[in-house]
Structure formats: structure tokens, C-alpha cells
Image 1 (cartoon, rainbow, N blue to C red):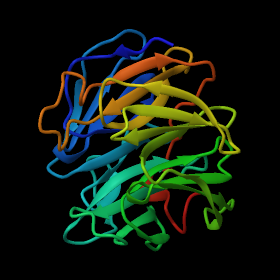
Image 2: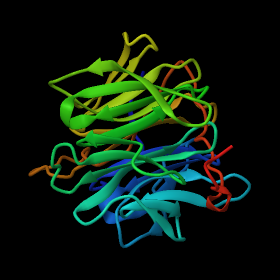
Image 3: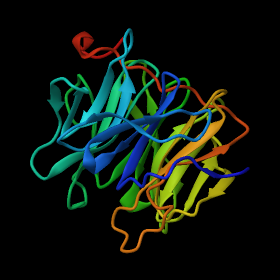
Image 4: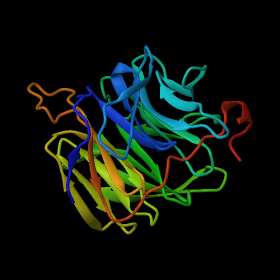
Length: 281
């Protein structure tokens, strides 16, 4: 596997990598920027939007070219009103659509106060899960039956059963790495889980049973999120951050790509907010 630095713009806090409509979409979280680039050859970012609030991640909306966004302290259409999830001193951190069209969002405190982070589901009473600190991921198995959710501060990834109507069921520890901080995640078509590890210069692939299967090392210190895309969906894109580094290198905050052997899927689509009457179908 050959690692490629995909472009040379260094993001402060690159996050939320998603393969949407044949393009890689990422965010510069604290700067509120939504960016995209092509997936066939290395290319600069194009700015899709710049908001005056943090943006954690976006997802495509069914039946159109709009984007759903986790922004500020809530979620809604990228340029529309939001359902608010949290109050002062809080912000969104990550988000993802599930295969049934629901949009899941995590929030956390700016000061990372333990236990103040939470998981929310757009259109539903919130939170659906609380007591977290730095909730990351989240990612779903291809069939939507499992949710993977990291609490980076605790070095833990949990796997939840998810019912057809979106309710969380049994929770199991999928991975516990007390000396590493699991960050963004994605799954491939056979259910393997790719995880970025903040501060460890590495992303790893785990089989559905939790066994380590593959590892990619990076010249950047803070990998943040991963997405499978490119022409045949076998290109793993990796965002990184220079946030908090006193002397960032030219690699910190850059986007990387490496070709792998198992494809992923395009980002799942959300139902339009107008359809949220008791949740997605």
C-alpha cells in the first residue's frame, strides 16, 4: 500500500470525511468550512460553504443535492434552520447518516468536561445517549444493525445493536485502547471497521469480531477521520489535524489517501428534515 498526500492545504481540524456524489467532502471543524475534492487524482480543495459556527460533518439528502450538517450545537440543512441539541459551552463534534436515512450527531463541551458529551438523533427527543466525553465516529455496519461509537477520551469504541426504528439496544465494548484515542470511523462492504487514532499517526482496520486486520502509518501525528471512496470505492481517505501542535510539520492537517483491498459504500443519505414526523422510515 502506497500512501499519498492528496493535497497540501493544512486544515486546523480536518474531520468528517464522507464520499458524496462522486466527491470527497470534508470539514475544517472549528473554522466552519465544508470542502470537497476529487477522488481520482490528487487535487486542491474547493470550498462548498463557510459557516460562522463549527461544522462536525455533513451527509447527502435524499432526492436532491442538499447537504445535512451537524453545525453549531445542532443539526439541519447546511443553509437552513437547526434542531438544537446542546447549550452554551457545547458544540457538535461528529455526525453520520445511517442506512435508513436517520442523521446521528455527537456533541461535546469545548473544555472536554467528562460526561457532558452525548449522542443525538435528528427528529427525536435528545439525547439518545449521554455520559460521554469526546464522542466520535459514529459509524454503522452496512446493514444498519450495528452502531460503532468511540469515546476518544476513554480510549473506547462501543458497538450497539440498533433496531429497525432506530432505538439503541445492547452495548458491547468493541475495542479498548487506553493509550490511544480512537477518532473517526467508517465501515467497508463486509463490515470491517476502519478507525483513525488521534495522536498515534495510525489508522487501523478491525474485523467485525474486533480482531486487528490492517494498519496504515502516517507522517501526520493526528489522524481524525476516514472514508472509502474513489472511482471503485477502494481508496481510503484520511483527514488529519494540526490543532494544538506547537510545531506542525507540512503533513499535519493534510489529507492522505491509500488504496485498499475491500471497497466501502458512498455516504448514506438522510431523509429531508420536512419528513421528520416521529423519525425516518
